Length: 367
Image (cartoon, rainbow, N blue to C red; front, side):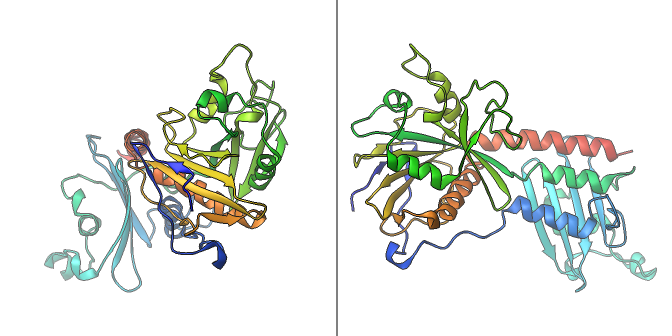
């Protein structure tokens, strides 16, 4: 089957998977993302500070923060397991790490054992996370720690997404041509209906994805959906205002050019090249083309630094042209954005923000 997507450096093309479209859609990725798993762990063992939940310094666990110098800040939550071992969550600018060790791996001097004491909290931390051995972590002081930890961890969870949608007609080869499309084909409109609901922007109360919901400056309508608790707004180029005397359609490109993931829906069998739309922000391009009345042809281009992400593509690149494919496409889009966070450029920005948030917490709870 002919390819409909061409990868030009620094992009790579996702290879076909092992499952044919005749066997049904590839399995969805139901794995909870790490940030959601870490937040759930924190709430389960330390509560959220808003009710009858465990205390962040209660019998079920301890928290260490620091150091006072704020040069390499870290926050650790740790618990003793019913099996006698220990489990902990380390937060640093570089990211979060959840680890577990056996009790035998934790140093406990004879004088503590003499008095029937278990290992010191810092000894547990150093066993769980040896990279913290040179940090002077201390027990926090003050009220509201459990709630503050949950708020910190919630900042790492993304529950809203915005994805671009660009229409490519037969014979079009440049981004200028594509951004100047006033509308698409019936197949394109059908595809938009698969992605989500057409909503009126003026007065919209939910996630707006940087669109104007008061004065119609970004159009009157858009496409929105909710999936697995995530709110998703689509930046649909043909629904964004078209500016007269602007061949480049800068306003349309401003929205799609700032999206991490975009869809190119094309009514042509000519391959879409990853260098067609020039953007530092676009890291994943999902190319979709109607194959016939029954199937869409789907291929994926991703920038170097984006790790491979599930669900895999069918071996034939074909998915049903029906509502059954909505979950598959949204799963692919969401995971594509998540896989992009570790790419060069994104990672450094994420680390700077995370470091600032951790420093604020450490400063608030150190004496």
